[in-house]
Image (tube, rainbow, N blue to C red; front, side):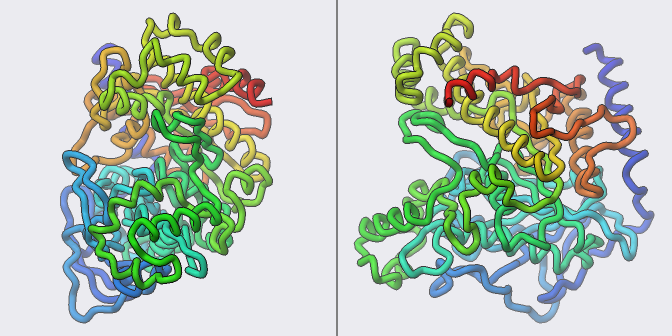
Length: 529
């Protein structure tokens, strides 16, 4: 794309945004507001107003460890809300992603435009972060662009992770679901306190990516979400995701985003036994320090439990059977999801995915159908790169096609807008650098289009910024009305139960594409029969 074309695209998007977002009032919004538990003093910087580190529940410590979230304690005077709260307990995830052992972590952050008219009723968007259910924090996501360009209130929150969020034992109420309980409690807080920030309590959109998207999809199947969630955006987190053996991470068993309560309880008993606690003595586990328990977090990844009062059905079954909230949904994923996971494995051990191991990886994943998969995805098609071939197999079979199937299932009962993020030069937020496995639009590379991550803008080109501005307008128009369309933007067709195109986001080229065909979903559907 020539420079003048890029500049024109940026100008068009900005003009489009100016014509479709209500004009900001001239006065700066107050930096002190009253919420249900007291006065908050925040800050205004640039085009956004922030209230950080706001408690939405009591600290889940001591006897409140593994108890559903309890209402936050009111305070007297004015509480400073200019720094985020602690991350929930987790292992360190690398530079900029510190570990934590602080269980006093149920905090949220509110970002609004810097200027909010008195009596405004802006859409409220509640963000549930990703991280495999065992890492991350709401404060990692700087929502200034989303709030100011889209004229919305954005709430990002922490929720309990790993063993702290999904542990279970027989006769322990809430087993397997404490993390989702926290997410819903944060959304309820946003609804009750929306008006204090110029938000509309009757217009709540829950949106999330990866584990946050899987949680958002699951929430649509929860009886507790009725009357709370008005719209949902599910990114890289369909209810129907289903990874074969070795498909999520090389060497791991088959997995889905959810687990049965029975399995969760069995894993909880095993964890208690490993911690030298008798199964019947919850007090023993509560007496353990957070530092003692953090190493167990990995054992409770993808352990959001169903068969519980919060999630009576497996969310996958609920979606297939049409037993979910009838609210508008945006649903999609990234064109090259699995490249980050396969790349991480190869960077750790280059011998895991090679031309020699490719047949065995396929056999582990697909058993007697491995030869058919190998014929469909021969190494020769990928320049001899086994990591690229295997990542494409897993992206198609375990990510893209299940997402398309979920979109069709939901479209039989509600309005679904399907999409694919497909920037071939997306920001490499995962730090994967392999010559024979370009990351393209790998898992999580869409996030810089909506947020600055850790305070950094990862967008590199004017074309990426123009696409990001367009995505923000689609996302916030949807939050405003349930329809992402806005003047001057490419049309976005709703999904149908019989399939159809998706809106594909590529810098300089946003338009409809047959994503299911590109990911060979007909082949995978036939293979499963």
